[in-house]
Image (tube, rainbow, N blue to C red):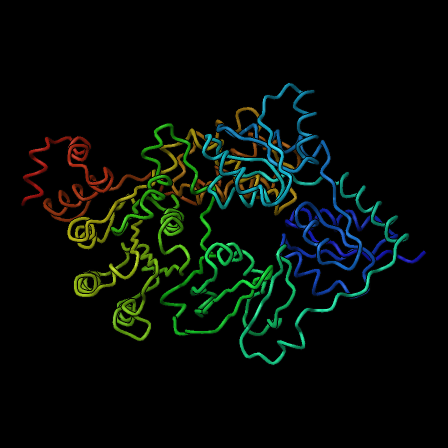
Length: 584
């Protein structure tokens, strides 16, 4: 019997790998798997659906979107009760409040399981994609910090700064869906290919144009694959609400090192976008730029479970969004300083504009000259968020040049400035520039704490990261064995969140079952101690006595948000003594 040719679009990497594993056991099918979620999955279907496939296989919201454009039958991979149970067990390791959100196919199974197992979990049913954002916003305002759901729910949670655990499909669900796809493909014939609207009319236009109908379906675009512009027309869909609410759109769009002009207009039930290249001048080695689409805070690094939410770095970063003053972020390596900078940017008036990142770690004095005075100078930027990271690597001469530019130009008024400093046990570095930023420039300071000071967050951080990695690795891990998490809490974590992720990656590779063992944890942490032998070393301050005292005062003020009373208490001196030192 002739093999059934199946095209599968997997919304996440773990499902792609599972589909390929199951396909190798079948002699009656020929399966090709593409990786793509929602609009990206739709683009994959558009590109290859006419290459002799019999049926399309996908899941959740991606399958629903594909049904709108495909001229082939679409079979949805169901979510079984066991799939829901596996995700619930993973979420139960999370210390904060969480809810299950999804379409009725998910929530009905979840309610049945919760009734049988006597789990008290809040469950919310949505009926359309348009309800996701409102539902998640209500949950966030009610104090929920994580949701369990399908791909579109987890993506929406990430956009709102919530944690999310995806309900992944297991082998049994994949096998049943393939069985149904084989039966269905032998009973129906293919549909005729739909003609592209306005193709002949707009074929000679020099601008790049993309048109979408009222349901967000791509009805026309003259974007070329691998040509200009170098991005898919589908990424413009998210701007459709902006056009509808404002009656039009005119904004810059950053992609790689090129700035594009994006205009939008509404015509009855259609939305049209016009794209032109406007500027291509930024040196990616000196200034790394990120478009608004690319500025995505790491959900693990942005999580803080402290009960004292008033001092949460993430909340403070959001509060600073509309505040005009520059921001100074300081902390140890791996605490998520760049994530804090991204949160500030996404909550500021510059959120729709590019974010320029200047990494002082790779810039020598000659490059600083180009950065300040050359054709790729920071002086030329307007309306950007400029993130100057790792200022401890700026030489004293370059520090003076930076101060001169900040004093004598309007760069701090024309852009949002954010600085970061990585502290180490050998001293902070860049004392001269720090003093300028905290004094003359009056920066607002945010100090993400090291992981060793918030070990109570390690279970929640681990659950968030494992949930995300399960989508990529097809891992079935849902938690830690007894005493394994305690061993994680006892570790010093000198490289903080970065090191925690590295350890969890290694543990997921070692773990074949549902729970991470204590022996694996101890083995991996022992290796980490060898990798970072200097973590237990004591450090001695350097410089003259006055320089040491000045550095200590600067660091104490920064750590206490420029509050002199708390800084004096931290230093063990009276407020009047601190005031005299500051005056001197």
